[in-house]
Image 1 (cartoon, rainbow, N blue to C red):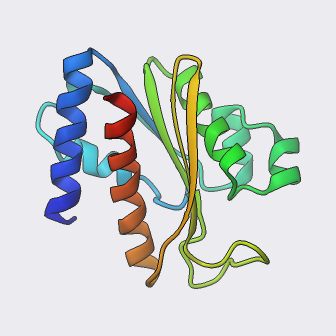
Image 2 (image 1 turned 90 degrees about the vertical axis):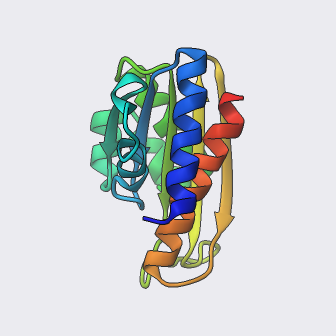
Image 3 (image 1 turned 180 degrees about the horizontal axis):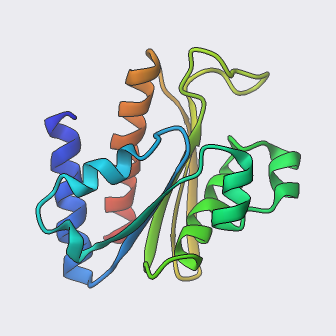
Length: 160
């Protein structure tokens, strides 16, 4: 894990602590990488509630209440599903705020309109949910690392 990611995770922790918020993560393409970065930070038990690794579409529905019809309509790699994942993480935990990731880390999995490196993010708190879609370059590890960093940076902005 890079120092940049650990620095972001520490900054996220300080921001959550300052606002008295508990965090949950809902991850697909990162496989728990966001939660891993967060739990590298001493004291994270005070602001990290839980992480969901929902790699399959079924797990997104079962654990996060993402409607199967939504996945069928727009695909699991979509801003709509990322938003629903973040909302579901808050609803199915004791957390106040959540971040989600869903994407195509590669080297396979690309579909028309969604090349390898396509990642969708969700950040949710209360009645507010923000989503974003980016396309990262590089191999599987590079895409996943960039995704973790962007998820944390976006979370920091969302908290503040």
